[in-house]
Length: 417
View (spheres, rainbow, N blue to C red):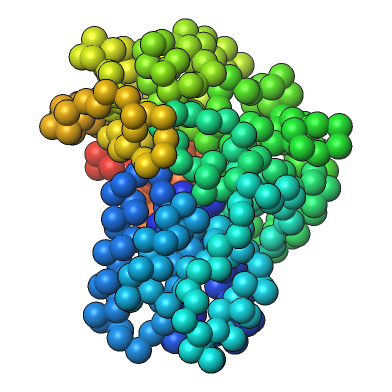
């Protein structure tokens, strides 16, 4: 083993883990395990700590480095763990000099563990094209944005990621062109707050402008997909692209969080219930086959049963298919952590009901696909995904290709052909 990276959390972390692996290896590190952590919930932080302890028991000779959002927001806690040899900040992890400094510290057995800079001081971001990450993968990610300028009362992520910053449009297009030339069929644009893309760039281009330019300037690109967006910030160019270009996949994951207006206000969200319903209806008019996923929090502070029921109803009213359910978890230092809390047992029960509603919605979608013909991106020898991101069980297809396949059934988890 030279460098092994273990990833928790979001797609952006998965992308950044490949940058970490490259930079740490280039720095000459060996016998090193990097935990790229997540801070979105208390459980995510606890899982990172448990992994650290387990790895030290199983591989006592390895050095353990913790980075990511939890390392940025709770660096002292990880530094106090005897099993941890180094804590590296969330911006620092993307820089070769941080990994060279880690190797130098290991070489001299330095006692100082923490190398975490002020994330709020970071104003720009450089593009990262990762050869190793992209090799042989049908679907690859391009990071176009990082950080968040909003301060939702439940969210710790801005303190782990810093303020919003964007990759210049020309650099994004060049990355997409290079990846497409290598044969990758699908590109996913990713970031922390994608719809804030461009606000810090000259001329303040919006996400829709970026999407249109990618599609225009990389005509050989087969499929472009967008990860999670804030629907209230979706611009007219983005809606035009959804309506007009079939290469932009008909699947959007929405940051909704709640279906109750008072809870949304207490979350400091910028949309109301009706805004979410109207957005889904508008996009469905533009692209009738669109599929929506959404993040919803169960048991936010002060949430009553009646308020929760409005979130539950949102699954049907927005026509959601893929649900990411988050039982509310108080994050230290956030305003919501100081609000009157819902009982833990009630939070779990509401999350269970939301997941059940999500499962029903997914089963409905799977059943509706039977008898259709879909363009399936072949991800492996046994799995693929439709343009709507619905999983498909396959055999005997060329990995990396997009195949037009007849859907004949489903096994409650995947479509079958």
